[in-house]
Length: 156
Image (cartoon, rainbow, N blue to C red; front, side):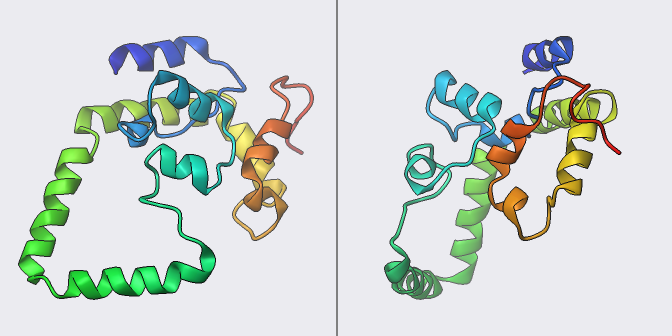
């Protein structure tokens, strides 16, 4: 992980999307998929999300309530301490290590403070990020529309 952090810092590329890389650990299938997700900064629908392990399964909208109700009722029938112990064990086994979280946080903070990520975030906020609208709903496209050339997307 240290090599990855050093590589990203050395790149200092203004167009490099910044995400918490540790959260992808074990979630995408292979380096190609991880690079596609990290560098492409695109939006994904249910099919690749299911394939990459980001969601358990894709369920048609008209079946969702029944699937959730059935699952919730099944889980509710198990002893509460067993459910808590299971959730804790899974979280412990799949969570990134503290070192990985610190490293990816350092990369993120570097780009926000010294790289283009802070400026790009400001531009996205001006264009409606974190409000219900086109920028928020099509974030991948909004990111792709930003120019990596600093002269084109100046913050006013």
